[in-house]
Each structure stands twice: as C-alpha cells, then as structure tokens.
Length: 315
Image 1 (cartoon, rainbow, N blue to C red):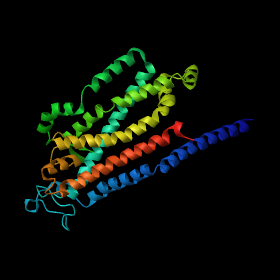
Image 2: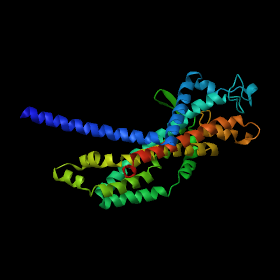
Image 3: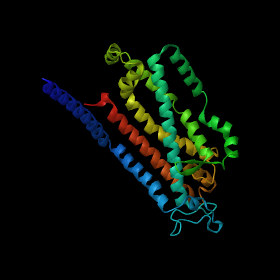
C-alpha cells in the first residue's frame, strides 16, 4: 500500500512537471512566432555582445583620452568611427558609453520593479487604510517629474561629479548612481497600480479562499498564490521600462543634466555632437543608431513577451 501511494505521488509530481514544462514550451513557442520580437532579441544580443567584447580591445582610459591633433577625424583605418571635438575615439566611447547606458537602464528598472511590485501587492491585498495611504503617496509622486527632480539636485551632482564609487570592480561617478536611483524611485508608480488592480481581483478568487481556510499565512498567500499570477505584466513592464530608462538617461545627457564627462554615455556623446550635426555627422551617428536599435529591440521583446504570457490570447 505504501509503495502504491508513493508511486501515485510520483505520477502526480511527474504530471505537474510535464504540465509546467509544456506551459514553458508553449510560451517560448508563442514568443518565437513573434518575428519582430525575435529580431529584437537577436539585435539586442548583438548590441550587448558589441559593448562587452569591444571592451577587450579598448581600455576606459583610451575612451576618455584626448588627442587634439586628431580632433574631428572622419572614420578611417585608425579611427573606424572617427573622433570628436577633443580627438576622442568614437568607437571606444560608444562601447563604454553603452555599458553605462545599459547599466543605468537595467539597474533603474530593477529598483522600480521591486518597489512597484511590493507596493502593489501590499496595497491590493491588505486594502483599507494601508491601501489609501499608499495610493495617495503614489498620486503625490506622480506630481513630481523626473526631469524637475534631477534639475533640483543637479548642482550637487556636478559638485561631486569627480567622486568615484567602486561598484563590481569598476569605478563609477557618483552622478551615475544618483541618476540610477532617481529614475528607479520615480518609475514604479504605474506598475504599482497595475499590480494592485490584479491583486484586488485575485484575492477574491476561490484558490485564495481555500489557502486561507487551510491556515496559510498572508505572506505565503501573497508570494505563493498571488505573485505568480502577476508575473506577466511585471515582466512586460520590466522590458519596456529598460528602454524608457535608457531614453530618459539619453534625454538628460543631451540636455546636460545627465552623467558628466569624462564618463561616456550614449546621451552625453550625443550632447557633445549637437553643435556639429551637419559638419561632423559621424560624431552622433554611432550613438544615435545604437540608442534607436536598443530601444526598438527592447520594445519588440516586450510586445512578444506580452503576447506569449497573456493567457487570454492563447488558442
């Protein structure tokens, strides 16, 4: 009898595993059917490979070093993408600038997703005065534009622009950290509302009521039963948020409120080229193309994930 029970449990467990694997396969297959999402994934992978492998051929000192005798050099054998107004290699600066821009986008989104998901779960599940306080706070935060906040703290960032912080073995300007934190703490508001609305619906479902009846704690219900059902919008929001964060950093760099030189980002490379758009187009062409391809790729990947993870669109 014990062996029969054990065998039955094994069969049930194997059946659950097969079901989980089949759902994963279905999701992957649906994603691969989205041609633009696949193209976006391949393009983004090539860009990441470019900024990663390219660093093996250049040092950060080379990207920041100036050679005034070589300024405004057009693309050629010595400088494949030309040089800027200070004789700095555009190829090297695009590589290291891409690392900073992508790092800002990914890290800022990690912060915003964590905060937005936590606030949405707590607000939607507990409701009452907790929900009222958190939603009023969200509404107040929506009244503070990211650009205005950065302009307010810009003098402090410029004053400490030379201060370096060692993160994962690389020294980064304190300005980079400040921009990441500000974009992160001002980008979670929309996601918190989405998660909250889903939680309000999910907590009334029968499986949540059943979990309460068997004595499951609130923490277990939230993280075991409710959060997994909110993964789809969270993943889509994360992918689209990376592109939005990169665009925000680029806009700030172009306006002079972003990462300060000599640290390179795609945004401040474009900012340095705005006076020479017609005379020296190679200065802005490389970072401009990289930004465009990166944001489009991430948006296409987000669209593909949205279709693949949406159970309502499955046949």
